[in-house]
Amino acid sequence: MKEITIKDKKFAVSIPESYIQGEVKKLAERISQDLEGKNPLFLGVLNGSFMFAADLFRDISIPAQISFVKLASYEGTLSTGVIKEVIGLSENVTGRCIVIVEDIIDSGLTMQRLLENLGTRNPAEIHICTLLLKPENLKADLDVEYVALQIPNDFIVGYGLDYDGWGRNSRDIYTVVDD
Ligand code: 5GP
Ligand code: MG
Image 1 (tube, rainbow, N blue to C red):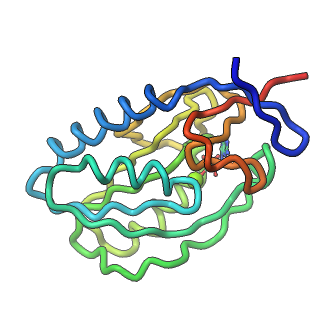
Image 2: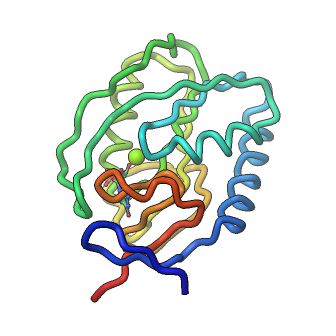
């Protein structure tokens, strides 16, 4: 089993690149079918979603736009519950079909905050798309329409997701190993 160490923690591969790529492609095809004719605006949530958003968006086969926002709420391996403001949304979302692109939905509180914020800007519709969902931990009442992968409640890194800023460049997803 391939293992890496980041700072004080050991991680082992849990989702290989080839499997991620297959699921991302399927999701892009589904979204393209569902949102045909709606000229959606994808909104990637930085930093974690940059790799997923790039791969997903390349496989969107309908006319679409993409932009990125920032909204940090996490430090180390435990959610702090501290949710910051939405930064960097310069597009006019009024009347648009929005697809929020997240790396991971854990408690769902970050997504809830983002939905509230976007809701005040009068979009026509908002769809939630996430690479990863931890269903066991979900506290917010969300309709998570587009999920590439469901995972257990363990801390993961890779494919854009970090541990204190490190590990984003792994092509595979790694899960922390308890010691
Ligand atoms: P939520 O608000 O849904 O609890 O947390 C969402 C944010 O927490 C994600 O955007 C991500 O930044 C972070 N997060 C939650 N679980 C993990 C995890 O297993 N690994 C990493 N790297 N980040 C996580
Ligand atoms: Mg995120």
